[in-house]
Image (cartoon, rainbow, N blue to C red; front, side):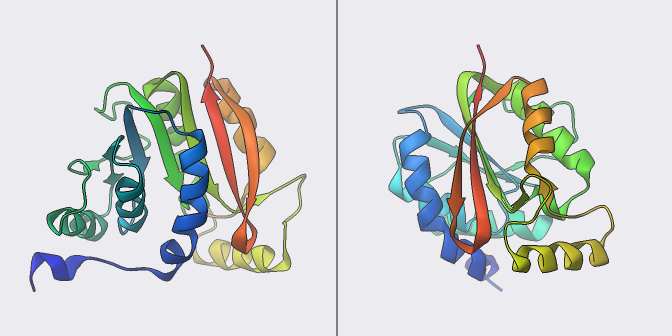
Length: 201
């Protein structure tokens, strides 16, 4: 198997990468480094880096297969930085101060401790005034936004009781404790949400 054969291509990122990109173009800064947490296959960062080459894109993941896929896309010509191995629960991400952070479809397929680690780490590494973009499904006011999300939540918890669709209010409250204030919530296709936070001065 060549390194290029390690490139993963998942259906969900192919569907949602363009709608997310339209938001990223609007909310991200004009320059600086964008750290992607839990980059997965690498499809998002490939798409974003091609559309916004004026930014430095820094992918990360913890899974070896995902990291191999990200590196394979980079070897094929995608213009982003060498991926970092980051466990969000670590107290040192070793990335320094960045101008923006992006994370998609992670917090519902990980224990709540990972959400805690993510928000603490973003608060620690995002510069003041920087932007944090969080994408995925959420419960709002204690309710799912669609029956399909309720079914998805049940399937996640059947796989692992520590997983599940998170409550928007719990996430935003915890984010605020780390200096991240919710500026905007955008409804997305497939009953997902994009949350845009700003690091308070």
